[in-house]
Length: 204
Image (tube, rainbow, N blue to C red; front, side):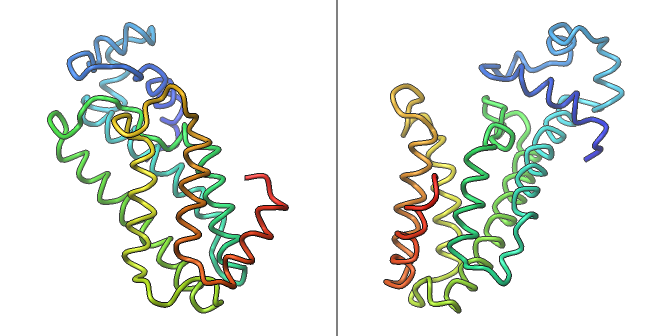
């Protein structure tokens, strides 16, 4: 993605909460942004091009979080704690901001994004889990592929309004509970003991 487009993409993302599919047009966006339609056309080409740029922006923000931690030479639980906290703190920048169903309107763009995000997160979590097993922190009787998919699915599920309506329970609480139950399920006794000591010293 072209970094020079980031400010405009961020402005568009701020408008998208509650947008319906038929409202997502260059005409409506240009009016709300007080821009000529030509600016959007010249920058993104089409509404599909804009969707792709938005999803790429969100993907890049997610990758930036993981790029700070190489999962090498440090405790695997420490790494997963820090990365997960960063995801929690910055989720507004990586959460897909388009609220309408992309499968019906932009299926190819959506599928490309979903595959890229799942592949990236799976690879990172698998790497962390493999290192954690070597360190004795994580159980050896679990599939790295399965663990990575569970982590990803739980991240998705806690943002599903059918499961967790926005009112009443904060995202921060949901995330903390999700991570706590996830990490306890994959740790050895040694790992659980380490985790217990860690969270007592760390505001998570």
